[in-house]
Length: 205
Image (cartoon, rainbow, N blue to C red; front, side):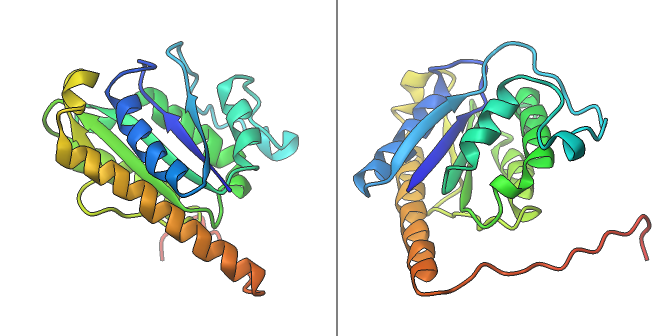
């Protein structure tokens, strides 16, 4: 089993990375393979609603998004991490997730996921809600912890002093490993994933 941890910060080794490393530590203790995927700090295009992904089977814009979706198809769980900007996740991560989830939705369905936020002070719960909506619209079980999934600090050294935040990150990893093992046992015992109905309307009734 493998979990992909996505670093949505513009800093490869900052506060978000530090939080993800603590989740990773717990996962590895449970025998789960991990990979931290840094989305990069170069400008990242937003979805332009061209619809080409339906024809191509991937996003028409060739960048880290397509690379990630290929990897995602081989993964069993995900953690998406972001710093907080004006009470929302980084714009870069949101553009990344918009395109990844729209062009490669099948890579994520029925796989557990968690969101992780880092902030100097406020805006974490609003950002937490934004990322979780990607999971709940994609048939993904949401992994909880023992407190809100966030850490505090303006630099990585500060995060290492946030003992409650680090405990929360560690417990995310433990809970995710448990959920993944339960899902694997279900598959081994013939429990299939649900067959969801698909109805799309162009108006609100």
